[in-house]
Length: 334
Image (cartoon, rainbow, N blue to C red; front, side):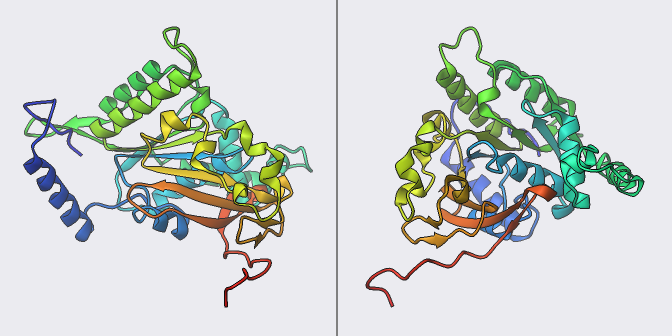
């Protein structure tokens, strides 16, 4: 994708906007322009048949809610699900070592626990170790790079500029073309506060502005992970059958800083972890703590909704599931 060059950098004409929109629509119509497909049809359908390029997706959830697992599975299966797309992946993994992430992948592929693979729950067999070798041999062919050292917003920006430039080329007409890149950040809170920033909120504001600017300049799709605010754990929010069971936009940490910049915002909940048996006013029956609810809170180019998934943590994977039955029909309905 070529970087758009304009004589005037402060504004574009309405004519340009319409020309670009028609080019985009025609490209999608004939299949030349596609969204990045994820492993889950429900996830793709809530968005624009997957994750569009030049967008930012924020996923918020409690610790151990499965948000990192979602990103890992998207990255893990992205090249298989999008064989016609020419793209790279850059992961900012401040919370987890690249080694740990790789072991979690082996777990998902061979269906054995992380502890077993580390010989902490029985000794890893030679056969299973060979499966890990075979998987790694195939996986390292994919263009995935990892940044492990935490950085400030300015350092984050510089790294992306350097990365995009490094993986670009100049065509015969002298136009620099950049490679499509899926970029994930495993935790917005782990971006370091610069000395010039007053507090973490200012850091998140600066991060949001940086992400918006970068996605306008480069063919990037961002996935940013975030925690939830502490009020999500107020006791009244765990009472069965209440609207307050649901994750709201205001529950996303740094919501004011990130939501205005995000194209898609998803809140994750695992109701059984809060002892919720009947979820929300429709009283969906929650059978166990593997049930995950994804609240699509903001979908600029899609549809807001809630969808149910099943977390298989022992295999480090997530699968779609049917919408659970409800405890009872609401009064006045047929």
